[in-house]
Image: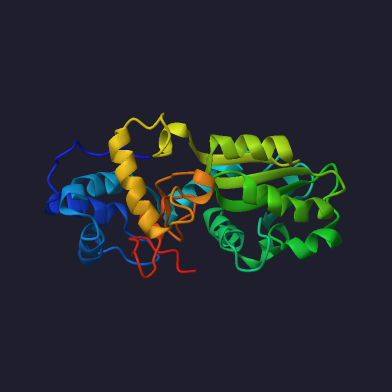
Length: 274
């Protein structure tokens, strides 16, 4: 979470311009108009609070994702861009439970970041279904690629599928762009994957946690009331994660619903487009 501006700061063109620049590149364009419509859903007395929520959004753009992935790979023991210098075989695999999930697009992003989009590198980037034929063993490394983990629950669920395909004992790394410290611990404790990520979020980044000091308890209660309007079933985000994270290609459902939920009762500024 970013530090919001002081209470009472003007919602003027300078502040709006900052939001527009910060959120540029989201899959559904953020404009002056969409920001205004989003703010108008709040009572006049609560719009200063709503503006401070927008200040706090941690937006991860496509360029940062590519840069972060590239740096994560460079730091892996045994990896080299030259096949002759690598330790064992390497496979980069989408960490997806089904076709079309975020892991698929993240592997493509990773290939661009590594400047390995040429067909000659296809052997490095494989699909889950190819793991059986490749038979990765103790000298090999499998990098499972995904964008985000907020609680570790979904990652552990997907691992149940992958563990059946990786019985040969390779080194298994789950590479994430963004994750909470809690998720990283859950994944490390409950799976055979070694999770690594570029951006780690802590309890202070969860808006409803006591550790988040940017909003008073009264303000948190007000935000929660609006979140209940946006999503009565999960007002604090998936499993109460309470995050303010937005990725350029999609907003995680761990993020509070007033930012992304779009239905008859609410329109989020960063719709997930499910």
